[in-house]
Image 1 (cartoon, rainbow, N blue to C red):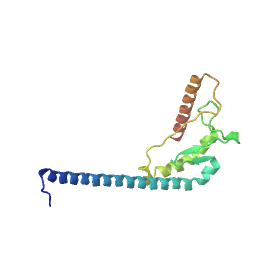
Image 2 (cartoon, rainbow, N blue to C red):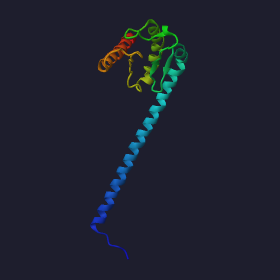
Image 3 (cartoon, rainbow, N blue to C red):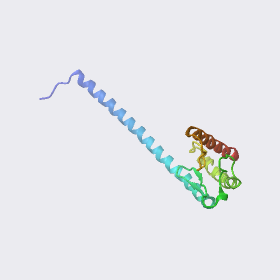
Image 4 (cartoon, one colour):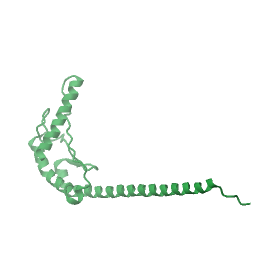
Length: 162
């Protein structure tokens, strides 16, 4: 025996249709975000590979490391002390560090600031670090000293590359 339709049955179908449409719209939005993320990852990998290929020899000879986030790390040469980046307790770059940056920065900058790559670069960050030998002060004074030194070193590198 067939059930008779009531007024509330008609409204239920309309609500379910609206909910289905909303679910499909959210599905399309989610797929669009996923595709955009995959596209960005592929392009960033291409930029990373371009930097790695173009500067591979410079990185080896200058003791520089390229991380997956496209950041450059100028590593301290613990064997050859003439390759210091900064003098202990100083924010002034050594001549050997200036030479490293002068050789690598223009090539690196040309790749990341190329018209096809520039829209995928959100920031260029310069980080300064302190010495491995901490000053012999109280903990709070030592912290502030290291904070100021690392900031001054980052500023020194920024001024040099500009």
